[in-house]
Amino acid sequence: MDNITLTFNKFNNKSVKLAGGKGASLGEMTQAKLPVPPGFVVLAGAFDSFLKDTPPPVGVGQDLNVAIEAELNKVKHNDVNSVDKASNVIRDLILDSQVPEKISREIVKEFKKLKIKWVAVRSSATAEDSKVASWAGELDTFLYVNEKNLVEAVKKCWASLFTPRAIFHRFEKKLHFEKKLHKVAVSVAAAVQQMVDSEVSGVAFSVLRLPRTGIN
Image (cartoon, rainbow, N blue to C red; front, side, top):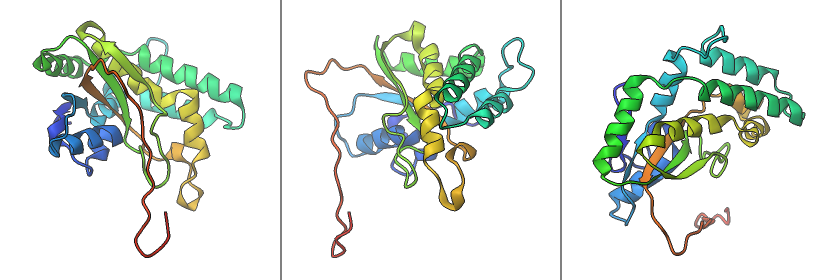
């Protein structure tokens, strides 16, 4: 993994695999000179490296990747208890594991460059807003995070890839050839962005009608 973090101005709408859908969009808007609060993205590769290289918690005999996949394979997606159990086990595995020093050090270093006290830490799935499934709004965001809680907030964003609603989403959205989403590599980045005390905020959705086709 060459980079652990990159600032928003390094991304565009083709950067989803690196920065997730949200991170790529923030980069696209930053490059367009729109007024975007500054920040950086903890790249999806950092999460992948965490899963691959971090020793599992005491008592877990498998590496994190293997243990997580084993839990997902037990899920009966139409059984709420099955989903809840897998979610709790997987998120505990992630939250109880130590983030490698190299990753945590780089996150804090980039935060200090912002020279601010509070940030929002925003999950950004690498499959967000794809043709197959929209992850927008499925994962967690943490507001008013300071340096002391920053790495833990990033780890909570990673763990939110396995909340019950996110696991349901994986199983409900089928891919071509009937492959299930949980068999496809979905990773998560984390956008760390200056916290803004807004007077008004909201979300807008739009529909694009293709010219001369009548297709939305």
